[in-house]
Image (cartoon, rainbow, N blue to C red; front, side, top):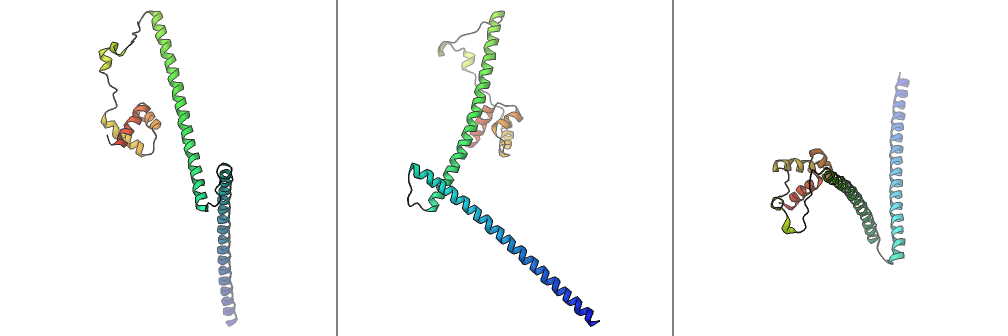
Length: 187
């Protein structure tokens, strides 16, 4: 019987040593992977800094610039790239809106021409500001009621842009942008 107990104790001790060995190897492997990741990240940063320094040497040499200045320049270039992308997106949206406005203008022109041909409407031409009809002079753009402002602000707070809010509520994008700018200006 003592031999069986001794074998059980040895087996338990060997199992414990095996578990500890496994845990230590696993921890060592994780540490090595972390070191490799940090080395790769450091290498990418060095490569980006060297690329920026090459670009800058061609434009304006920074002979003894510290690495923090070079990092700052890399961040500035990335920010400029992001801003350029946003501007390109806004320009594309503006081009689409201009194309839609041109399409609407051509439809209106064709409707006016058709009305002239049918003799339904005689177009009124306004040559100077003095000839503006009085009903036009007193007219103002009507924004949605103030009760809708809360709904618009709520959708904006959820992260929706003006075009999304316009599609959900059915108010023109320009009006949504005006309402949101009034909110930011405190009006």
